[in-house]
Length: 279
Image (cartoon, rainbow, N blue to C red; front, side, top):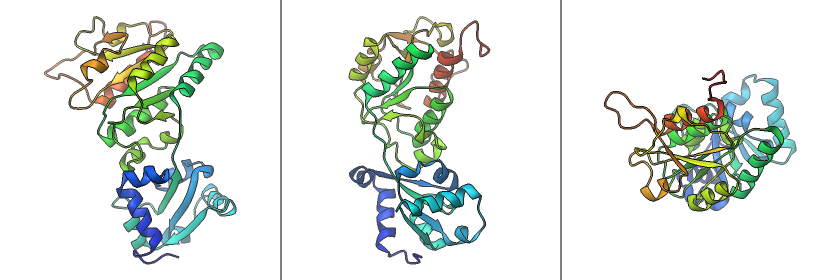
């Protein structure tokens, strides 16, 4: 058991938690809590730390079996003291489990190709989010989680977006990070060109929009451009869209929270329409 916060492994985990550059260099990220451990594919786990008080308590059979499976697979599994877990964890009240996991690697062409294949084979229209410089970890995590719920095919993020592997973002996804494909550092110019080639329409919420979002027929596939929380989309980015749309606003609001807007658009695209239950 590791009981000293001066332990080299503990220091390494703290460095990974605090520095996105180190995470990127090693190709790993941290995930905390029992649920996130159970959601993390064992094939992606590099290290597993379990607080001693949690290890002593009776856990579910699935939880115990996964820990044993990690050991059998040669993954580094170690028990740590409560003090050490608090040192390594990002949360004020750690749940007693911390995972060091391998990052994901998706390619834009791959995600779009798979979405087009589903359209051809299942009649399921492609659905994507294109994010420009989204800064709030909670917003990004919520978008990833909502995208899974809406049945999106993937998310493309510019280099200026907050680190998707930020511990706060990871928690906000509630495990959706493992199921929603995403591309970091994407060129929206290149992505929109790929989408256009596959006849997937790109939309941007804009004051020049002639129709409200619920008045549009999204048949064939949709990709929604979502901008920075404070400044919205850059004009040159909005110009990449095939179509401008509007979201109705009452009161004195000028815009919605970015994650809320993304959720409305994705769900309308996937489930909207005069002949749907959503309508």
